[in-house]
Length: 453
Image (cartoon, rainbow, N blue to C red):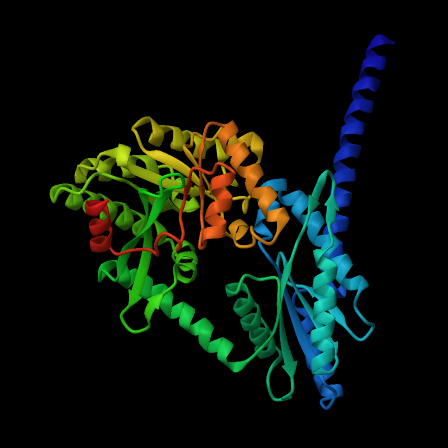
């Protein structure tokens, strides 16, 4: 009897285990069926549907809305892909709830959706804005709360001889145009957008050439003591003078350089150039001064970054105590512990570290107290309305208090007037940068200031 009982017990446990697997498999299959069987989740059926619609009623106005959820990768990075899938399903439901009966919703790839509608141009734009507002409402998935935005491109079907695939390309061009302007907007396709996209493709190859042909150069933004109004440091800012297009903004070419993997070569060039400039100033008798460089999140997360820095400063003969590295909060989204370890190594050899654009990223106070940093830089967006917006003023006060609580020096960026300087002086900010003192300067003008100060 005992043996039979034990066998029965094992059988029941095994059967329970099998039931759990089957239940999970059933749930997974149900989710897959939803993605594969429902019309709005079929990533290819929209072509057949649109072709049929165009044949049946070629004269009726039609449009395509192409959705791309902004920075959705952050959801997967923070909460995991399983919760990310749940969020996408909730976005689908929310869009579908707000669609008229004449519209069809299709789930294309990951965080991309397409809506085909029978509507006029103005109605398409109005609908797109309604859907964008629906997506912006808080989304709750398990224990997480997300605030999402979307960039939407519209292509109007006015010529029946154009293939449906061409219309989706046009809508995508409109999305890409919106993404370059920060996302969270609706754009109707215009012919110039295709040209802009082609120009971006061209810039990718030009960035590679820019390193080879020495088209990059540096300017220096002074860091100033709030009490004495004297320059105590510099921030090296990268500039690009394109051989045909002239000056190109870093906000335009840095994301491209990160995308194509050139940011590491550019970062190495910047570090060498700063070391060389420091040594040149030292040679002619300029008093030594701390120089900061901006470090991309992709650079910091590279396993060999620390060893590359060591190699370069040893080759150049740079004194590391006059070198500072500015790192954005967003650098810590991926592998925060590894990033902190790299920062600790850099700081151990005398390099100063700062958190740049503080208040605009994703780090928590819990991680802030772990960061081996010396400076906290308040993003210039908070200084913009400090004299007219009491909310901005209180945020800045809190940031300065927080920085001092952790033993950090605080730098206010974007000080452009006497009122802003007076404010940060009254709330005990340590340093500032901005046009009130000086715009970014070329190396020879920095030298003159250093020699006469």
